[in-house]
Image (cartoon, rainbow, N blue to C red):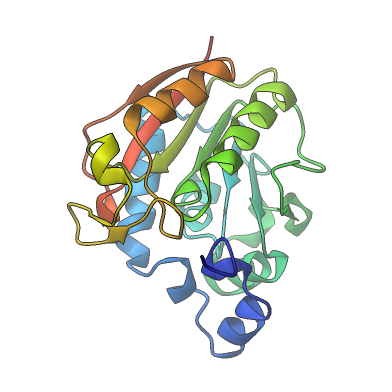
Length: 223
């Protein structure tokens, strides 16, 4: 069994990567393609400039550098395991810094969402639960449902295994990534994802849309 639930949880992982100027690479690479895909998902799901967006796993603002110019000033909030990574993204990638107070980038290791206002109405977690065990998805779903009474939609991505038998071993995803049941990157069964989401108080739908790395989108709407 691995010593850490994901590479991001290894001691000094962020310090070493940021010291090498790799703030784009450590969030998975394919920066422009993935950022465009994230923004397109939100727009297709109805995001408008007046909405209040929470970017869970904001990283180095791959989405933020696109969402901040689109949203009304101050309407973007980001959380991540690493505050240093978000700050580097803020400095290096965000063109109009006046539209985003840096205090709205909040370090959060356990989906507690400290300091995030309850006015959030849209949330996204892209390539977050692909690197965490299923109990982290359960916790995040419950926290999002309880913490944000104005929430309209929560979008998140996962890797799927085709069936229970194959889920016990490595699975090659459509985009070539190999996923696993008990080490990162993780896959899950579609029925398990739908069950967790619905049990947490959402109506849930998995989409057929092709996403970078072979991820699958789940849209969760408060029931």
